Amino acid sequence: MSLIKTLVGSFVFAATAGLSLAAFHSPTASAAESPLAGVVTHVQGSASVDRSASSMALSVGQQVLIGDRVVTGRDARVGLKMTDGGVLRLGADTVFVIEDYSYSEQAGKGRARIFLLKGAMRLITGAIAKLQERDFKLETVVAMTGVRGTDFWAGFYFSDALDVALFDGAGVHVENAAGRVEIARAGDGTTVKGPDLPPSAPIRWGREKYDAAVQSVAWDGGDGPGR
Image (tube, rainbow, N blue to C red; front, side, top):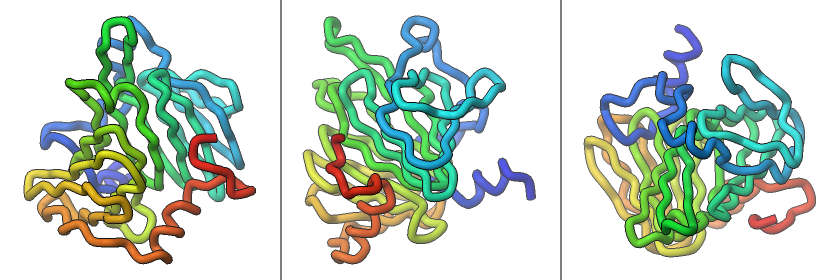
């Protein structure tokens, strides 16, 4: 089985049935207008960015652009500060794509489409998720997560299934063709086992699972999530 088929088959979580892998590599029209999506604030271990059919090592201070695919290695961590003030952390063995991330403070408009193909991530959302007409979605190949102003974790970390948990804030919803759930209480999480299976009803995560999720994207030294 090819790597692409393995990714598609094993790492589930998408917005629309017609989504193709080409979308993971093709910047949207907004990329030509404002390609900057964020800046690298932390690199621990080996990490790279794929851009325009080339790959380069990530370093602190480097810009990440719409259309970039960020790949982290074993035991790696990457931190990003997004253009709307959002703070993103990526764990080890993660593949993450910025399909769109555009924000205008003056116009009061913004849009974000980010993809988690494998691994784990934590996001403290910025201005886009707080807009009245918020348009912020985390996607994979079998379900979609819509977010409000919040701090949440998502990952294919505990198994091949996708877990999503709310750490703080207004909440998230997780949906696919089989169903939808809302997570409104901090400490609750859901699991999506496949594209044809609904997200599980949110339940309170135990301390062991919650702490493991936090540590999966934590820097050495145990610093806070916004640093």
